[in-house]
Length: 239
Image (cartoon, rainbow, N blue to C red; front, top):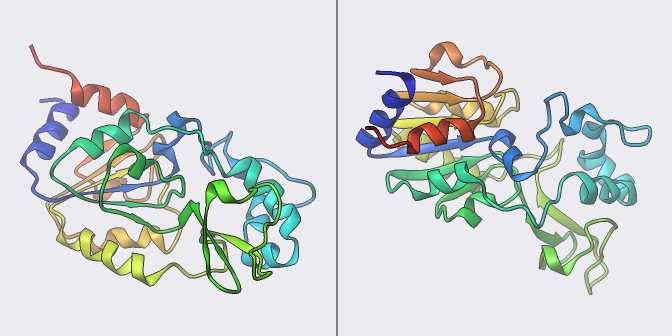
């Protein structure tokens, strides 16, 4: 039995699967990742690195340049779910998706229980009165302001900001309750999100990522390839 057949069997026999995703699952949808050779972090933007720009301090001090970068590099309103998003949304035994992504594609694919550790570009809120705004209600390329005069901020977690405990704790609970965890498209170097794998105590840990990770030696199955290729194999009918 090859690796793909083993994974098919694991998926079929699992009762609670948690899918944990990073930027790699959305690359086939036209959204660049962060750390690859062509990723967002490989680019310079003016005299600042992307890491500097998407920090809380930079957002407060220079919102104009922040939004120029954010609107150009991080918001893809026309992106559509790819075969991987759709495949995992279709599995009835996926109990939750825990994602580091901010693109909303898991929900668009049909996944119901999605924990967005780093927030979502689809939501925005006034920093003064906390009124929420949809993506279509603001200009993502320049600062926008609420009727009350407060500046509107994307509901995404920037560097220097804590994760939302109302998302983190139920995500950890889902991981702890899972019998299978499938990790897709993440280098597992972004903390604290990557540390949540330590809460998994189930039967099968599966890693699907183009490059190796520090967790490869702990996994039952490792696929160092594009998730789309893995999904194609999983959907193939046996003769």
